[in-house]
Length: 323
Image (tube, rainbow, N blue to C red; front, top):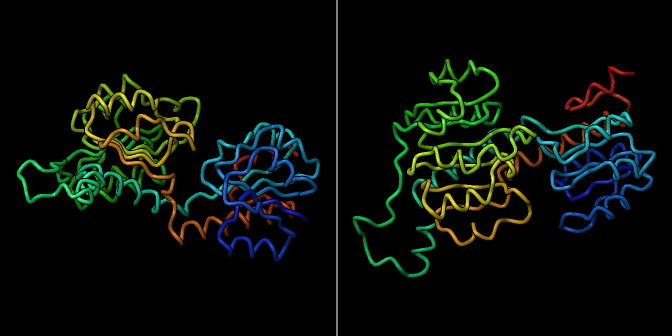
């Protein structure tokens, strides 16, 4: 069968696909436009896409042969699942493999914000360092502070567990009780308001849904400590970005570390003007091991789906129950 891949992914995944099917990879190192995806999908049974590709109803309905959609990402809010369900097309994701990589990036942002690493680097490179000073680049301590985890799934749990070396108190806000965090860290499940008010560091790990969109806005930011650091490696629209810019500019909070943005790839210009925010290009999972494993899993899901099997990481298994 034929598979269209919307962007070049690590070679082990592509090689796995080539052994079973004929593949066409979008030739440019950029996000393809909608019409380019439709053109590439023509005559193909499989679509391997990225989180940056909005796979809507029009794209899904554009190719009658389409039998399988494999998303090279954990999240799948970029795909119209209802449209896929209507055509009985399995959709898969790549969970699990980027858990530690993303948790590590969250910690990297947290450290960098707390100790003003990026700001200090810029300061030094500009030739402004004239010797040690008692008030120079003063940041926030981590030891014995309170870490708030919003969303205690795989990544949120991994993030929290890595706090053990700093003897941090852990609060978490989640739909379900996290027994692992409570057993290992004596973590406390709290409501969002308490977490925001009591935490010195807050890390976001929720999926993007109608309920989580803009869950952090002006009201929530106002509840946080003025010394608080906020980190987001989940989804950009979880924040009201305009409110975040205002909060950082007016020093409602100490700093923020962002790997994702509300309207990617566009970033609120106000963020570029601030020293108390660190901006990453949605690269939390960007390690050799994680990205390679994601490619292999996406390929395995595709191969299973095109063979008429239920992909291991199928996110819409209900279509098989209806058959």
